[in-house]
Length: 295
Image (cartoon, rainbow, N blue to C red; front, side, top):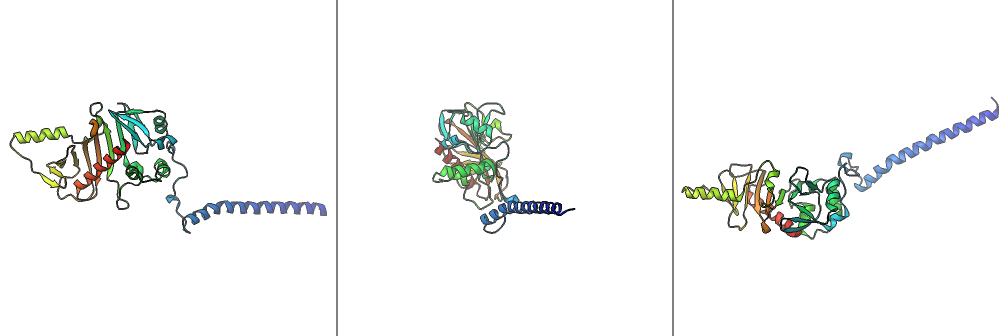
């Protein structure tokens, strides 16, 4: 082999070595850049991958559309509302299973935003959906929760003033006009109704027997675990998954509440203390605050 051949081989080997070194440098630069960014954001501590929120919402979810910030015009019975299209919101627009507009989905957002006014049979709110830290709830909070001067918006964005890790008091609420739609047909477990409760009390009075009543704040507790809000023009009536006193621990309660304008609400809420009556009153007040802000 002559000198020129050896020279060509040496040059080729050098070029190959430079390519390998460059590849190694680029590989490490790409791999270390996110790590350094995470360390800077976490104050020097690297967050585990399980603690990081996905870069994009899962399939079927969507970031809030611009129309949601203006609120959705909703007509329910004789009442008119303007409701921010949060992920908690579903508008029932028909009697079928699929006749709803679910604002936690891309399809629901598009359908709701395409109509100047949505005529609904029921306004359904699942407040637990607001507490997810990924997807639509996280994006919705980022887009609409900067100004928390409105009490209703504060409740949607931040929940309630509770110890960290404690679930929201008000879990589910469904508002409907009982003259046009039976909201209880949407659920397997019916809420106690004031008309039935009143008729039962009248029958007991006619029979000359009065059921034993136990006071609980602004409520009277009747046999069978029925709470009735006494001295209220539109009383809250509910039952809980408890049949003993004193009540301790967490319980799930379902009730009904007549509202202004002929509307009725079915409310589902949790108790986290033994003061069930106080928990119920606070849940009902949260719902009234939201509805008043949306009128």
